[in-house]
Amino acid sequence: MSETFESLKKREEALLCRTYGRYPLAVKSASGARLYDFEGREYIDLLAGIAVVNVGHCRPELADVAAEQARKLVHVSNLFYQEEQLDLAEKLLATNHFSKVFFCNSGAEANEAAIKIARRYMQRVQGRDAGEIITFTGAFHGRTLATVAATGQAKFQDGFAPIPAGFRQVEWGDLEDLRAAISPQTAGVLIEVVQGEGGVRPMTREFALGLQALCREKGVLFMVDEIQTGLCRTGRFWAFQHYGLEPDIVTSAKALANGLPMGAMMTTNEVARGFEPGSHATTFGAGATMSAVAAKVLDILREEDLARRAEELGEYAMGLFRAIGARHPGTIEEVRGLGLMIGIVLAFPGQEIWRTLMDRGFVLNLTQDRVLRLVPPLIIGREDLESFARVLEELLSARN
Image (cartoon, rainbow, N blue to C red):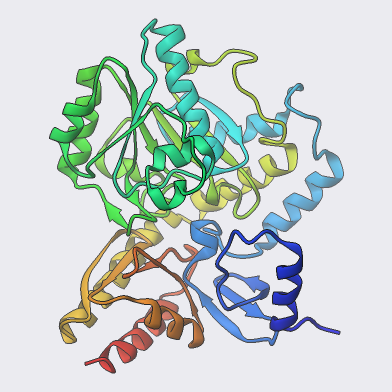
């Protein structure tokens, strides 16, 4: 007998820790940019597992790679040399200016690795008593204790005291605030090129270039969190490439293996001197099957030129949404983003609109109470974005 939505809810309440505020949807299957619930209803996916399934749900090529690799080798631990890891590393590092990579399982772990290598590089290689990491208001860097400390938001820290020391926050976009905060104890500055949970806020070019210059001037590491923005999401392979930046450290995860657990921390040959055997490790990071799938994901991103597609579709979609705001004053305050990472900032709390959009067959999320966040699969059709825009305008016009 097939499960129902209510029976699934009851099973979950009996079995799982209550750490999620679930959406009113149970997904049974998915394909491309479509989700299907247990009643067979179809939804247009504008969330992509929170910027994860960039090449679409359930790609047959990825399933084939995973199955073939699982029959050959799944796990032997990182005590052994593994061809699949090296193949992945070569393809990943070819997309940017970095020379070394550490693989792990998630974005939080990638940011943990970035924090650790920054501190150890300063203390063991540079011989400096520097360990503080500076982050920015509105940031989100993960849910581990260290990355919650880096995130610096009270709602994520509630009940988890004592929060690890060694982190300081400054105002987003304020170079003078950053300059005043950097001290001899600063190891690095960690930032998202486009804040995701913070409301889809891209850095300005002036701030981006000024931040990098300030890090160079002060001799601290420039660290970029590309957990959400990387892998073609914003219209470049990496969001920092929009500004011609060359960070010392970049983190990646989410879309790297298109839904399988995979993270990466990339850095230069110089900063990589901060790690040595025994200084950091992971049991499962870049196991053979995960590595093979991630390598295939990189092939698809490149062969289908999904960065260009994200840039073009994103500009088109943001134009649609801005036009809606112009036709219906007092409904949309702003549309912002890069590529297919889009925030529609409503002029009022958005919970009712978000819920109605889901009832109408569109899956997306709401952040900062008023920002409808769209991070769809990069293979989504233009007609799906047009369909969403029509329904959104219908709902907003009904408020006027």
